[in-house]
Length: 80
Image 1 (cartoon, rainbow, N blue to C red):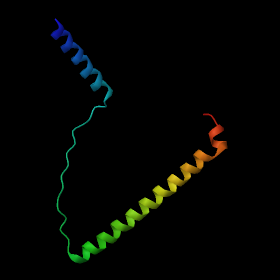
Image 2 (image 1 turned 120 degrees about the vertical axis):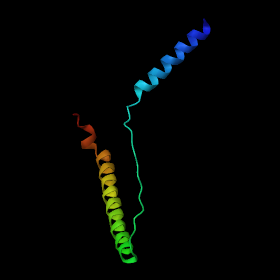
Image 3 (image 1 turned 120 degrees about the horizontal axis):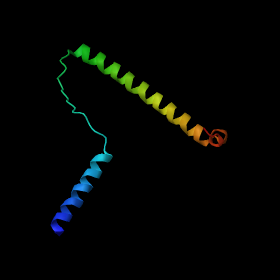
Image 4 (image 1 turned 135 degrees about the vertical axis):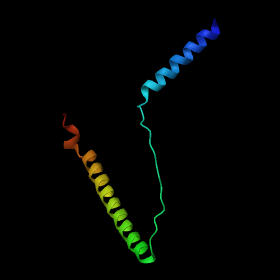
């Protein structure tokens, strides 16, 4: 009897845990090697570096604005 109860409790616990998690769709990833010559590789590295720097600059500006907004008393006192 106790074994049946333990199984039911375990089943309930598993069901509750799975209900809380969002359902995931299958994901497939395929990596292919990029074949480029030396000139293309140099140009590609430059473009990727420029993109990285732009991303970091935008991210830093967003963090700066968020910190300023959270520190601003007039924004904190507003209610939606």
